[in-house]
Image (tube, rainbow, N blue to C red; front, side, top):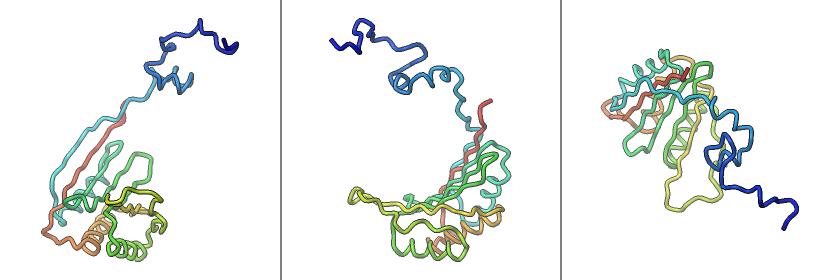
Length: 184
């Protein structure tokens, strides 16, 4: 018998404050915080549907005007070959990104647009060393610096849709708009 392990003290019960083995593995630092964990944010508004290009500025303005603790606007082309995310949280700078399936021509157009607008380009060496052949690879262009106004943000979205993805005024995009309140 090992002199470092006292088999008579072993038990199948969890230590006080642990609800599962993950809590045991994380150690004592979690035991005291289990009862004082922050509650999850609550969704206070959720809208989804379709939108035409001319309606995008109104959706973006809603995001910028929202008094909610956090808000998120997602615009997608059919089959999710393009998704544009914009979000903001109280006290944090707004964030945005453009995600699309790998395509050399679209990537070239996006890079040209980002250079023309003085936006930060993603790294050229983005390709992972190992990925599953046959599965689509998506590129993510983070929008930085973020446009300051709703009008500038709308103009950027419209330029991406028209110039890079050849979206016309009568094309439909799907949208989701979510507002959340932090729990008290």
